[in-house]
Length: 280
Image (tube, rainbow, N blue to C red):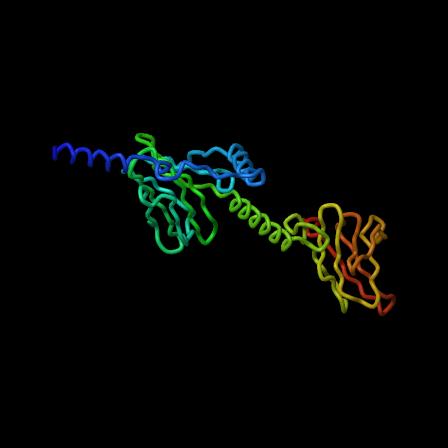
């Protein structure tokens, strides 16, 4: 008789350890009005449209953060590793069922490249619960289920917003680098020819001479009177189509030799601009 009582007690407690969480709560459901049902319907619709996980390095199951509702399947007495983003620091973690589920925070790496991991373990199969993990960067909402044979060993996330931020930063850096090598006229310095020689005697000199293969630009200092510009022709010196904008001569052609002339007679000052490619 005593043996039968002991067996009965053992079976009773064994049943307690294997029953589901629902067996411990009241069967009475909440009474919800239409407004209260609306968020549940929206949540269900969102979950149906979430992105599927993919397999990444080392067999990691990767969920797209912010676009998926991650569920981790765990076999009892096996551990499942959830890896967070490198450098991310866990602030707190809450398990819905901390009696039959076990979670521990562990780390890999060190210093700034340390990576936080959360290791989950279930004490029985057929269990369902949730976990909330808060970090210095974001909040994770995790669904947990246990199964007798199905098991997810290694899980992580893809962070699309971070990739967008990295791409944006790279683009901004590229734009800044381009601005550094771009002239006020909007030309990329790498595509310009600066090989001009300036000769002659004058109390002023061009600040810069260059061409873009189509037009020639002669940047001048601020002068009370701008010089006249001419080019070498078969007959000697001749006028050419050009205009002045912001103290810069814009010549509508490439020339081998040009002249800046200011004044006449004994007050005449003249500089010669020679394209070095023409001298070769």
